[in-house]
Length: 150
Image (tube, rainbow, N blue to C red; front, side, top):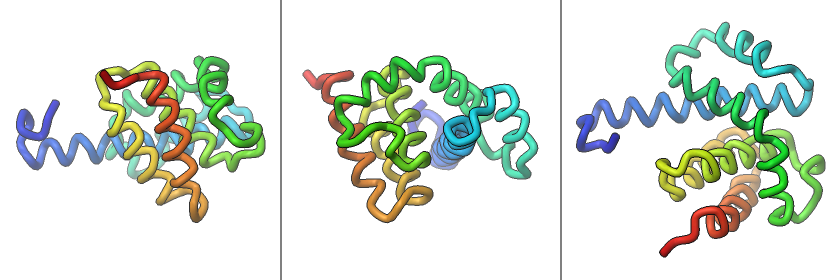
């Protein structure tokens, strides 16, 4: 849905709920990476948050389950693009990269620039000082191979 199709307010709201979905997925994947909890337990915990209703709930579940279910494939796609082992990454940047890789590889209807932009913005909010630059570089290289232009 484009902003023109939904009207300015509806488009902004949709983007906001999708961004919140990515943020909740980030929180859940952090729990998964650090604590090893399963998706069902993580989702139950996330749903208890006061502002969970502001997120696109189906997309939170899709991202969380999709990343966990495809973790081996996503890690294999990211590994050659990393300058260190994935385990050496901050769990926040690692989770953001996994979300971005999932969207690039499994959600072709989302424009590659949107995937990268969203990942960068989330990394600016939740990652380390320059983590967003690393996320941008890795996802940009992944997008070039996963979704070549032309």
